[in-house]
Image (cartoon, rainbow, N blue to C red; front, side, top):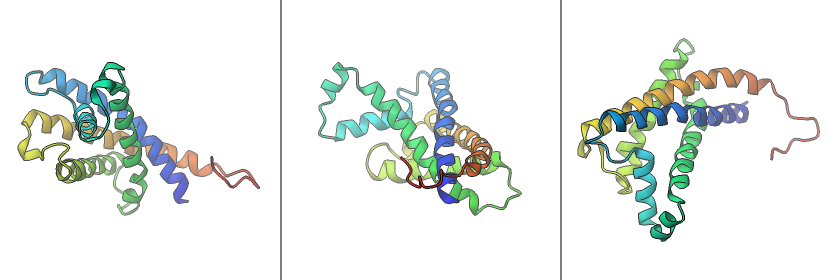
Length: 171
């Protein structure tokens, strides 16, 4: 039952993004002189600057902050939806926390070593301050660990739900 598992992964990704965000905000408070913006702000603002949207208008209408956080949670949901595929290749004896934390590191690597520098949204980790890297890695480990725990709890609940007879379409 792939679809229910993907749904459980997506919901778990959203839930896990809350504690991840707390870790990022804490990192900004712990390293106030070296962290200017946390990743959701840096990524969204960089993408907005590269877009054809008028960022001055967005700033005046106070739309930047909602864009920052909605895109952050959407990315957490998208990455979470792929977790069931990753989990399915791991031995069942691997704990949910370890499986999730390792997946969080994989998402960090794919993002910060992969698409973010490749698209010139953010510099690669070797070009970034150590405090930024520490905060980003720790937040992704926390995200992954919470994702793994939530997925384990939600998967069993979601897979027990059967679609209504004759109502196969999902909205």
